[in-house]
Length: 523
Image 1 (cartoon, rainbow, N blue to C red):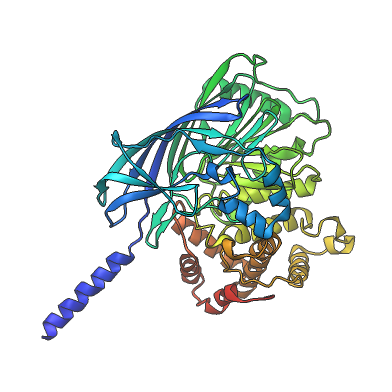
Image 2: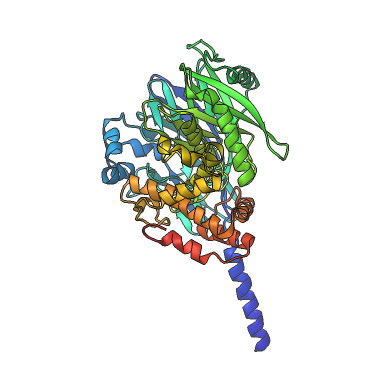
């Protein structure tokens, strides 16, 4: 009996160990898309390879159809605006509406049916004609048409400029916690599967495109780099490289590996800055910025801001893994801020001075780490990307300028003259005096309004990271964050994974620090 009991214990232990083994799905995309300037729309076809690395047999796959979030007042996006964002609600009501249509799914060339989600028109269930076994893969294809909304929540058009985001049918994440089919929201971001993208974009010849991935058209890339290098040395009268021919089109192909999203931005008014950045390993990456050709623009130094951000984050957390990084100036009549996507970010800071623009660009470029390479569940745990990233943004501002974008020009000269450590201590003490009631661990959908969401997820988490830094020491925290990055790069870490990585690195239990994530009020 003793031998049997021992054997049974070993079997049970191995079984539990196997259940806890990490896995993640993989989705590889090939998309062909053409922009219609007059119709404010795109027509596209998508073919994706879905690889089932899970231990489960799948009979369906949830898909996001996020362009439908802009369709009417029955969407989760509208309800969120209605509940906690009056300004956003007003924009939604005034906007030209958008949607996705023309879907015709096939799985391995066999017609497949879909089932509507009963609550959200931007989620559907694709029913697989045959079960997808563990370790197997399938091909899924569909045409689709997207009508753009007026730009008001990350995606859409203003005039003849386009931000093409959340635009293609995308499988929801399936992980060891189950399916994550989530509606599109403005306050609360994403969770998507890693994979590769091969995207061909057809636009008018006089348009400039900034996108996720590496441009494969050598002639276009060469012209863009040549113009971008010249523009980097200029302070005004930037030159353009695009064709003046509005009657013809061009097709640009972009490829990307180990990413979980793809976005692109296009306008006939963009000029480009370009430079290269050598990382300590010897790796050289391309840095581009795209902005409007306006006299006296603060974007004249933008490519240097991008390079500084990549250099610092690479030193603090881990080396930038992609071959290119882009920042794009957004429409000038929207509120200040930005929105990140892998390798490309939109910056909307129309009234920013040099320090503020640098801070915003750094924050959004920094999301290539916290969201891009470390693909956490942003909807459930938004602090893991926005808050940790804000901590590093504040560190960047303090070391470079002795400034902080939250307090702006209100900081007196005597504070700016302090050492970096003393400066940060004053900033975090001041921030901790601002009322922030909700716990940091609150999911984005549970916040009462956008102001509380912004303060808690960004500011309160940054304070928590500072508490963590003071508890273990900055050098130890840097070492631990690098260990976390190296362990979870291109994967989906949860809070417990973050905690384990830090504890293993510093050699201490951090229960007391992580308990603060659930604390109401100030830390």
